[in-house]
Each structure stands twice: as C-alpha cells, then as structure tokens.
Length: 228
Image 1: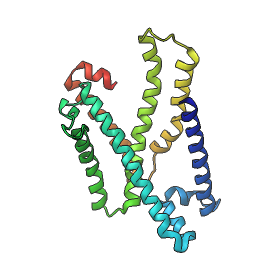
Image 2: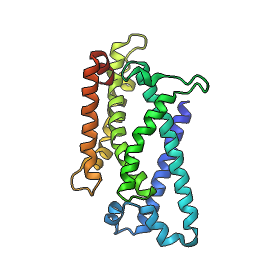
Image 3: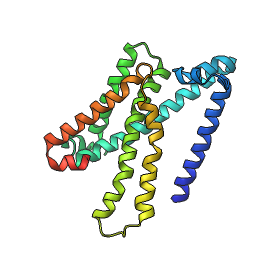
C-alpha cells in the first residue's frame, strides 16, 4: 500500500508537470499572463493546434470530467453518510436502501447540492468546460483547507490516544510540513485581484465554514468537536 500511494503521487506529479509544461510552451514562454487569465486554456490550445483532432480532444476532456464527477460523487456521498451516522448531520442521511444497500439519501442530498451551482452556471451561460473549471476551483479551495486541517489534526490525535507511541518525525514534523506545502496553492486561490468568479471563492468558502460552525453549535458540543 505505501508503494502504491507514493508511486501514484509520483506519477501524477510527473503528469502534472508535463501537462503544465505543454500548456506553457503552447501559449509561448512570454505569455504567462494569457495562461493565467484564460478560463479555458485547453480549449484555446485545441483551437490553435488540434485542427481536425479537436472533437477527439474535447471528448477526452469530457470523459475525464465525467470520471472526476463520478469519483467526487462516490467520495462525498460516503462522507455525508458517515457524518450522519456519527451524528454530525441529520440521521436521515444515514439511511440504507432496502434493496440496493446503497446510501440513497446521502446520494440524493449530494446530487441536490451539486445541482445548485450547475444551474447557476447554466444561467450564467457557461459551457461544460467553464462550469467544471469554476466549480472545481471552488471545491479545490475548500479541499485545500480540509487537507491542511487533517494534516495538522494528526499530532493532536496522537497525543490523545495511547495505543501507538508518538514519533516526532512521522507524527509531528511530516504533518506540519505537509500542511505548509499547501500554503502555496492556497495563496494562489486567495490572492486579491482575481477575475470573476474566482474573486468570490474566498467569501463563499468563509460562508461555508461559518455555516458549518453555526450548524455544529446548534446541534451541540459533540458535533462541534467532531467538525473541529
């Protein structure tokens, strides 16, 4: 398992570096501002270089988006289901379908929540590439905060439990460094002067966090401690 996890991270990192390099070279080394302000850089590159292959590239992008949405739906549904089972969300979301044995209520709740930004994007005239990019941008900001909080929670967790001895390097230094690394992309998402709708993401994220705290406080101290 460690080899698979670390190896997968290494392969994804190399793929990301290669794809970023290709985008930079495609736009031109002196055109970084154009890359940063383009809402659909892949579509722009396809129009510049793909020619008759553009429909196949768009199909590949579309299937990648569908795969990401399926993975996100599965993961987030399980999160809603487990939070409901632990009492952090209404118990109704922890229901299991009698026939299919799936968390159908959590699935419907997640699909309903994701329908809201999708409809807003449709009303705003976004196509599927722009909608996915904008929604993923907001989700990435909240995911960064979750990853950082999870990494920093490890030292506190290790101090409370007694089964495994505390190892400073693994249980303290590595989590702190892991959280610190995310400060770079976090600043990229929070820095001022960004175009719409990216300039709204920090405020939306702050509203979601504030709403979570208020909800946890209303449900009692146990739920607030679990969300914290």
